[in-house]
Length: 140
Image (cartoon, rainbow, N blue to C red; front, side, top):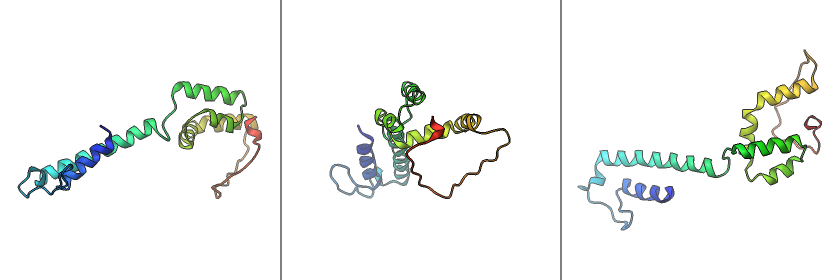
């Protein structure tokens, strides 16, 4: 059963309505008891977490497999255009951002070793949220 369908059924039960008949349960129904309603709400929370967890593993933003990551690194080392790399990897922007974020210190260190002298001060302008360029000399 898909989590969405399970959520619909449990939500209906917790609302005191039969999921198939659409009729309200009588006041003496076990589904109208306070502990039952609380338990159903806990079940809804768990189903929501399951749904989000499943979406992260299979949908947008899912982590890359080890093979995908190694292929990405090889393509980057081979200086393949970033747009071409992105087209080859059927993953989304958020997964790429997460991958970069996890490796940010190593990336910054490698860039600094290759382009800065010891004691150089670097200033970052973080006031803009949109960047556009056609060439990045650091990537060469």
